[in-house]
Image (cartoon, rainbow, N blue to C red):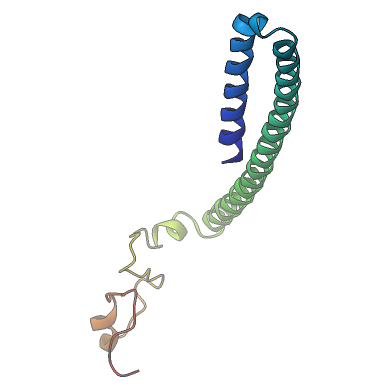
Length: 140
């Protein structure tokens, strides 16, 4: 909001300076004084705008640096996982990767089951269950 307001003030001052440049001679000394005052105010507001733009850009640079750092962390984690997979392949052969679960669902009503093949008969009915975002109304 500050940027837009300051931009509007600069636009208005620019219009007033243009008007006084065209018709300020009819006002004599008063017109010249007003023109000088407006030009001084315009210069001050330009400096204020430059500082504001600098601050905005610095905030963006800081945010981009944070995102870059987070991206580097993700790259390192992905690299670590890939290295673990490659080490598992070297130790156990290709079967280490092919035995893992490759079924992926991204939704709020599904839960990942990492233990493929590890279930008992009484667990089969609850192997996959619907998850809700709120507790059921069971009196709890």
